[in-house]
Structures are given as C-alpha cells and as structure tokens.
Length: 374
Ligand SMILES: *[C@@H]1O[C@H](CO)[C@@H](O)[C@H](O)[C@H]1NC(C)=O
Ligand SMILES: *[C@@H]1O[C@H](CO)[C@@H](O)[C@H](O)[C@H]1NC(C)=O
Ligand SMILES: *[C@@H]1O[C@H](CO)[C@@H](O)[C@H](O)[C@H]1NC(C)=O
Image 1 (tube, rainbow, N blue to C red):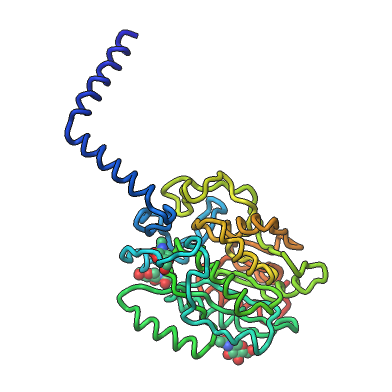
Image 2 (cartoon, helix red, strand yellow):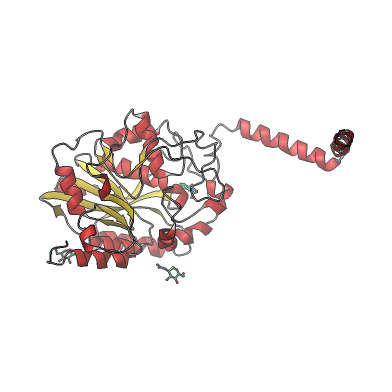
C-alpha cells in the first residue's frame, strides 16, 4: 500500500515536472492546433486526404474479403497492382459529392456506350481488373468471356479499369486504347486503380450498368482470377423461379466481423465503419444481381460512407434499401477455393477461385473436351 502510494506520488511529481518542460508545452500546442484544424475542416475527415498516406502498410494488392484463415491463394494476384502501391501521395478529386465511393464523382475515359444497344444482353459480366493485367483479360477472352451467346441468351463480358499511374503511364494508356479498339470490351474511369479503391471500382461498375446498360436482365461482378462455368450460371438464371427484381445472390457471408487488426489487409478503422459486424453480403469473387439493382445501389450509396471492403459495401447499400442478398438455388455451386482440378466437379459448379490465367485456359480447354465430364 505504502509503496503504491509513494509510486503514485512519484508519478504526480514527474507529471508536474513534465508539465513545466518546454517540449511538453510545444506538444500541447501542436495537439491544440491539430484539433482546431480537424474540426474546422468541412470535408469529412476521411475524404480530406488520401488513405494511402495514413495506412500505407495496409495497402495490399489482393482483392479478397474476409473468408477464412486460408490465404494460400492470395499470392496469385500479387503482381496485379504491386507497382501501384508505391505511388506518390494524391489528393481526392475536388468538390467530392457525398464521399469517395459515390461513383458519379468520376468520369469514364473509355465507356463503350453502344455495346448494349446493338443486342440487348440477358447477362453482363463485369470484371474488375488492374490496367496492366492483360494476361488475365486475354485468358478470360479465350474462355468464359468468349461466348456472346450462352444457352440461347446474349451474354456480354466487359472489363473495368481505373487509371494507372506510373512512369510508363502514356505508353500503357495507348496500349489499353489499342486493346479496346480490338475487343471493344474495356471500361475505364478516372479514379486511381489501387487496392484500397476497389469499392470505387465496384460502384463505377454499378453506375455503368445503370446508365449504359439498363436494358440487360442480369449482371455479375466477377473477379479476374475466377473460373466461371457460364453455362451453369445462365441455366440458373433462366429458371422461372429466379426473381427478376431486387435479386442479389452468390456466396453469402453472414455476421462477418469488421477486421480491426491494423496489420490485416481487410483492416477497416472504426471511423470508417463503426459497427462491429457487416450486414449480410455476397462474397466479392462473384456475385450475380438483377439489373434493376445498380441504379438503386448507386442511389443508396449517397448515404453509405466510403469503406474499403467492396462486397460488404454493396451489402450495406442493400440493407439501406431494405433488401437482403439471397441464397442461390444451389449454394454449393458458388465455390471459393479448390484444391485440384477435377473435370466432373468443374462441370457442376458456377465459380471457383483460380491460381493463374494459364490455369483458367487449361481447365477450360480440358472441360470442353467432347468426352462426358463425369
Ligand atoms: C511476379 O513478379 C515477379 C518479379 O517481379 C516475377 O518473377 C513473377 O514471375 C511474377 N509472377 C507472375 C504470376 O506474373
Ligand atoms: C472464341 O471462340 C471462337 C470459336 O467459338 C474462336 O474462333 C475464337 O478464336 C475465340 N476467341 C478467342 C479470343 O479465343
Ligand atoms: C482513390 O482514387 C482517388 C481518385 O482518383 C484518389 O484521389 C485516391 O488517392 C485513391 N486512393 C487510394 C488509396 O489509392
């Protein structure tokens, strides 16, 4: 007891001494200035400067939301955006409407406006991909993205890109334009293409669907490292009991905790998203929705502040709309990680996460052999 008290007294003495210390006074003054600066800023705290400046070590080129402890597949996309993690600090666009994720803050650089006008698609596949990742795009163009007609219905595959920033930006942009002249399948908007901006990318996809392709019946956001059994997907959507409106389906995530550990790539600060759990959402690898939803989601996003977990963000917009994602008719068809290629298995599923563009081409060609898969 005695000891403890004298310890407290000692602490008090030290505090008194440090109060008089000039360094301490400067520190206090600095804090005061900082406080005044923050509270007088009319922009939201988060939109007033780049996230990357504050959380450089959380920038991670892998776009996979929390799923399990098994991260073995995360290596796969490491080359996609690594070069962008060393970008100089940037400031958000001026006169930001609502917040960073509101898609109408951005402008299309390439938008292939006419693609939905010639033939009305039943299904549009929207693939977010890093500008440099032409290998992933080419593999998709040779496989599930190559069919413009599936099970008698029109399907369209498009790639969503942000702006690349690096030394070779002009050369890359020219290459992208060439690529688009050849395939007419690139959509590019003027936000910076980085891992922490994936929510912007998803919301720009929603904006594109709402404004450039509202006549399509369904759409899917599908990652560039996915195996997609497009026939099975179209057959699922052709079933008469599949809703035509307010429908969002995929691999459902319930009661997922918001990751508060600062060294996780899915870290979201309390200031960005205060609740401890995310609303029900569909895993970002591939989710399918009726095409009335994009406009509604863009509208709802006005009041859902930016946070960097794109699939959970869409879940939050759905909740705001009073809607919830629904289980697919057969949930076992939306698969995330696979151990090994199995022809019979791949003939039955809708999604699987793959390891490389080469794997996609190999598995696809194998599956398309004439012999029955099972
Ligand atoms: C990723 O980059 C490293 C070095 O830059 C290279 O050795 C490796 O082959 C690349 N991997 C892929 C999948 O492109
Ligand atoms: C798409 O498939 C057709 C055959 O259906 C083939 O001729 C064409 O080369 C394929 N396109 C690509 C980019 O592989
Ligand atoms: C996200 O994009 C905006 C708009 O281009 C940019 O200002 C910002 O720096 C980007 N944020 C990150 C973390 O890359």
